[in-house]
Length: 95
Image (tube, rainbow, N blue to C red; front, side, top):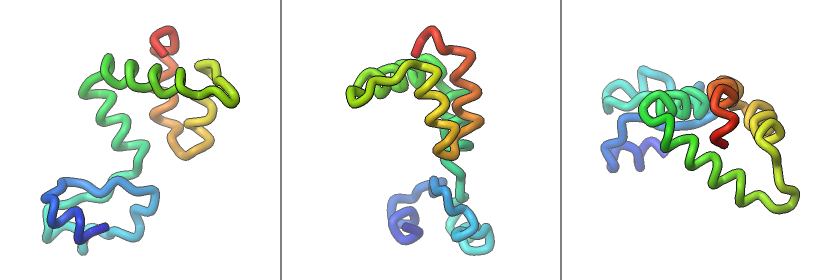
């Protein structure tokens, strides 16, 4: 993953395993490791409307079973995205 990030000149590696990418390894390449929860919060801060639209589209594609907004946000929390889910809760009517 690091080699691909270096070749792509990425600024970040988004991973649940940030401990596998310590700063002393990434810093020489100008790359940081970000937990997905942090990455998604950053994206949300940049473009709340776009993220809400994308989440609504993703949730609407769930058919087996379909999920209401609260169940979807609970699922995000269970899947290691609690801060992102909390941010989205404020916009539940748009999701």
